[in-house]
Image 1 (tube, rainbow, N blue to C red):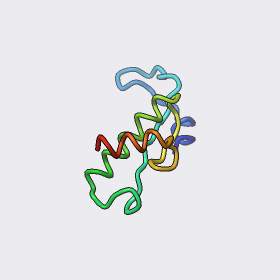
Image 2 (cartoon, one colour; image 1 turned 135 degrees about the vertical axis):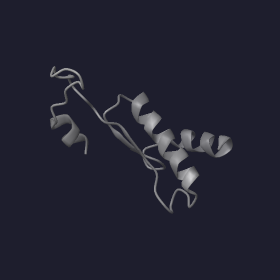
Image 3 (cartoon, rainbow, N blue to C red; image 1 turned 45 degrees about the horizontal axis):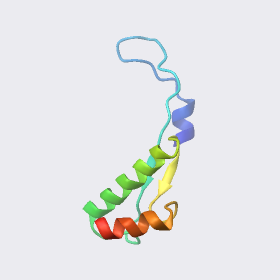
Image 4 (cartoon, one colour; image 1 turned 90 degrees about the vertical axis):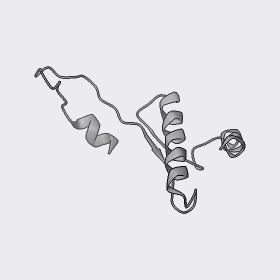
Length: 79
């Protein structure tokens, strides 16, 4: 998906000028491994997305796989 976005030539809505480089960051949580509750799955995916952006953008972070152990531990306390 990120490769498709990188290959696309995006332009502004009102102008035909190129927007420049567009990247895609994704946060992923998995049903039922991470949770069976849709709201919790969305929250976990959102947290993964923010970690992707904090670590350089243009990447995919999977909850529970790409997170350092201390982040998962803190999350279980604050969630």
